[in-house]
Amino acid sequence: MTTDSKSIWIPSERLERFTAAALVRVGLPAADADCVAGLMAEADLQGSDGHGIIRLPQYVQRIEAGGINVRPDIRVVEERAAMAVVDGDNGMGHLVVSRAVRIAIEKARNAGVAWVGTRHSNHAGPASLYARMPVAHDMIGLYFAVGNANHLPPWGGMEMLLSTNPIAAGIPAGEEPAVVLDMATTVAAYGKVKAKAKRGEPMPEGWMIDREGRPLTDPRRAHEGFLMPIGGHKGYGLALIVGLLAGTLQGAAMGRDLVDFNADHVTPTNTGQAILVIDLAAFGGAGPFKAAVDALVRDIRNSERLPGVERIWLPGEQSHGRRAAYEKSGVPVAAALVDDLDQLAASLGIPGLR
Image (tube, rainbow, N blue to C red; front, side, top):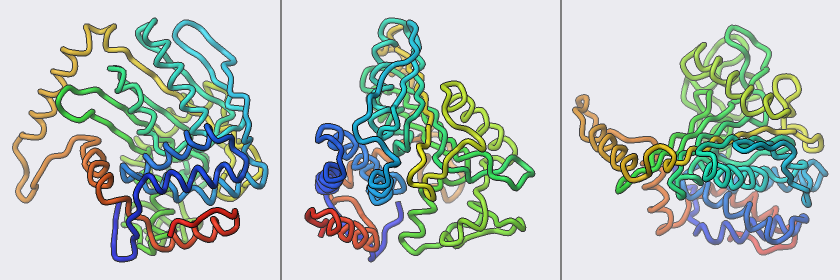
């Protein structure tokens, strides 16, 4: 996360309470609101500022417009020993995916591995939240999702038929922090574009191009172009495969069927996600695996560096450190966003963040 003098530092507990109060006000049951608010606060705490409280006004707008079901019947509609499909009944994505992960963890205890996918879900925040959940159970988590708006054309094309389609992995370690990879299949997730716009900062060249193929750096003009895939045509291919696995396989939306939840607050999105959980107990036990991960992490961290490089980072290390720092100092929230949230609070009749 980028911070500056325009950021206001707010304890994550306050963000969580504020979010829960707002969600209850628009109709979520208290327990569901607490679950969603906790995951949103965790997103901000780890520095995923494009997926935390910045999304609250959008969620509220969508709920008030009838685009999200505040009392869904989240249920398993397909099931075998090592798989399930969860129908989210258009509920909040955080609730749907959390349920899917819990089911996958229990199935993996019995089968060694488990795949659980979702359909009729919604935006659920950063992928790493869900890839990390199995880690606490000495399990590996691999998470896939279809993004909630198409921002990526096929390689060489101009029609945006694909989304950022993120992938995440949570790998348990022993004494070292877990290895947690969380990446969009585009150079930047669209949430980062929204965060840049809220802070009034330009985007780096390479995130987006306009329809003439020129670099687009003003996040306020993001609608004039599209995101770039990682690794050129390879990123396009990866976005396609992730979408097929997370969306099409479960009967969720992909391609032209995808609803842009940034522009349409009423139509159900039918978002798809999937979690693959691997129980280390089925592969020789957690102890030897985590010891091997520790050894590899240390080899990588202590390996020879290029001139001018102070440290080699492992995936998830910086988020781990950021979480520890923010737990003490609070989470930096853009002043403009705090203003927006206080206006939202006034409209809902709840105390503001300030």
